[in-house]
Image 1 (spheres, rainbow, N blue to C red):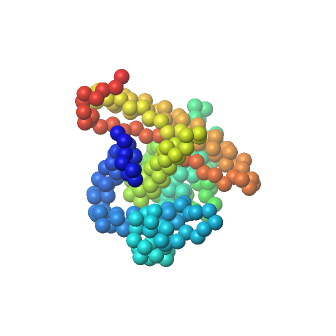
Image 2 (image 1 turned 90 degrees about the horizontal axis):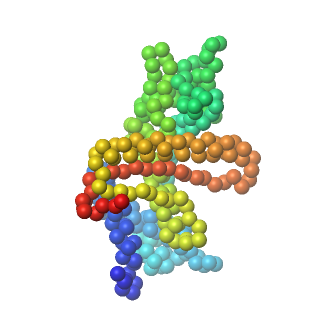
Image 3 (image 1 turned 90 degrees about the vertical axis):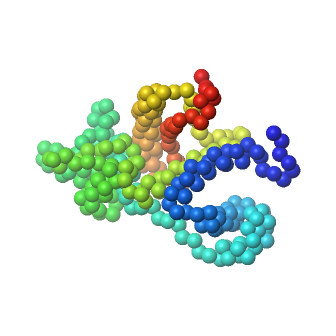
Length: 281
């Protein structure tokens, strides 16, 4: 299918519809209406145009931003003058992520098979490793280990046995509870996934890892088995990258060019096929 002059690529519009459907479902379930989203999109369009579409050696004017975004010039002027604050990362996210990253990668806290050890709450003459020691290793804020433990318990990240042994329930920081924390990762991970895919569409020379395996014609039992297989193998990859990145981060603390971040993830999704005749081998 060819596009009329001035129209965006039809394949891109089809992809956009696929991306937006689950997002719109989420927005509607939380009372975010089209007018609210429209105002938010205006602000984002203006910000992206101002930051990413500047002409070399020329100031970015309200008129040009209006031209390339379709946002009225009065709205552009208003939005550019407004101070927009960014939502800070929830404290539980940064602390929890650091605790778990250390727990699953530091030789002190994993057994010979690389499995995170169950940790007593406090150290003793017999048991040197403890949850208190782990928190002290990670925290630079002198946080009380009990405060950190209570927060991880709230999020479903850890459990505590009757004899006060702390058990890690997940191998990566994916909160089972806590909307703010889950929403943080929702935004960060989808943003980076989309950014990688956008880069790959725009740049044919270099590409980020962005691959998937897709099959139809599977039973409920098949999906359950593949889900378990995907989770196990993905966690092996995540643990390996986590351990290596943590080593590099420690080594690079004094390097002036250590100013990059990475995000490596994996996902698995299943649903009933819309068209049962559309089967792939």
